[in-house]
Length: 329
Image 1: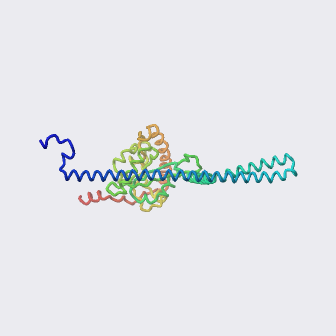
Image 2: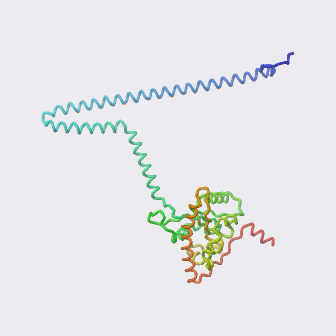
Image 3: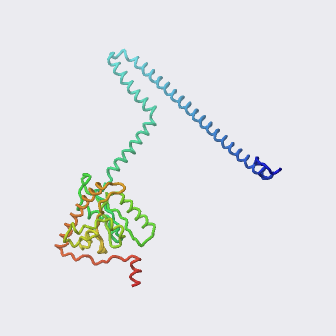
């Protein structure tokens, strides 16, 4: 019977455990009560400080108003002494001018800190606006995912593309932004993971349709490029399914890249709907950037043929996976 229907906590624990648990519970409740009391005391103290500060501000404003009234009365008394020598019209004009001046001085004095903050905010806002206007906006963005020495010639690449691009935003100059993110499919470094993520993020939009690739570019990425360019440039030996080949001596000289390999291409993405853009937007961007690429292809092909350009002799560097495969043969 002693073990039947134990409904109370003290019936579930032996006496020593119950006392120990109860002690811990009581201490916890006491700490919570102390914290609550401290919080209430802090709130009350803060409210008292705020109340006292408000009283002090009110007193200060009252003193300033009294002082201003004294100054005003003093000036009015001085004005009254000289009114006998002035006409009524002159006295009225002087009173209006003095009143306006005093109102302005009083406003500035009572709101000086707000005026200072407003002036500072205007200064910062103006600086930000001017800075934004000075930043060059790109008329074209090109992605470089080829992993070779071209990644160290960003400025030359930008100038190279700017010869064939229009002033889209009408700001008086052409600016091309070449985004450097060389991809090495054989590397698992953090840099490569970051580059890969950056490239995939750029694919969400169709603003950047032109991509600089090479023979080490992953096949999955080449598949999203327009593989039908040879049909658009029939008979041009510099155009293949990977895009426009930069295998020209004159291009290496333009880019100041002596060790430029002979496998570099300018590819263009197929126009497809993405997360951010519709097919119509993608097609519009494709047509515009294909126009730039066409101007480049026609111009450089003509120059290479006239100069008897023999092409580049630097072979692409083999990646680790390729080197292992070759050694096993």
